[in-house]
Length: 223
Image (tube, rainbow, N blue to C red):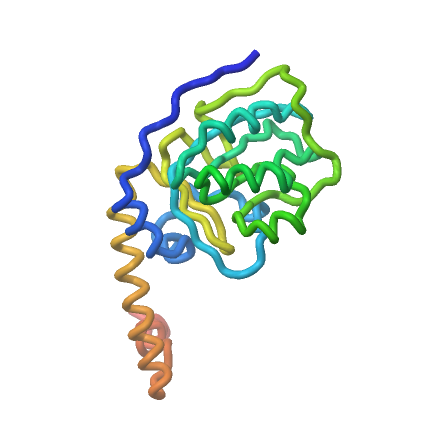
């Protein structure tokens, strides 16, 4: 059985551009939810950061028919998020899928499971995040699959139309209404960090700048 829903409204481009300037690890200084499990890693070498609209699919076991359906629906700026319903044997994405997704304007694919054809994935340059690699590939068995439904990926709930921010450090899922506040706070923190590093380079010590030494002296002095 297949469940085929309409595509979500894309996240506004200005919000995605703002979010792209924030690092997931910076947002991780003040948010502790929405981050996928660290076992889902980027398979393409070199630093990359993408921000896009989540288009979701759930496929079961060896049947990856719904992944191929999704390739015909993807728009520029989308990120395909695949819930594998616990399967860690069959690869849901290989070179052909990555090539077709890139041609559709997809920014990346996030898989709570396996990928394959790693040489081709790296050649095509489409960022793929997955739990690992498998030589056992999925097949178009035309049995079942779900498109644009709420899914779970890396221990995080992902709704169609959420924002995905991903780089080599990890993957963050944000509802659109949280993008601006999170991104602006992170960008300000990154700017402050640059200024702190300049002071360190000039000879100051980081624990003096950030107050660590002063606070420890207070604690050691007692009440």
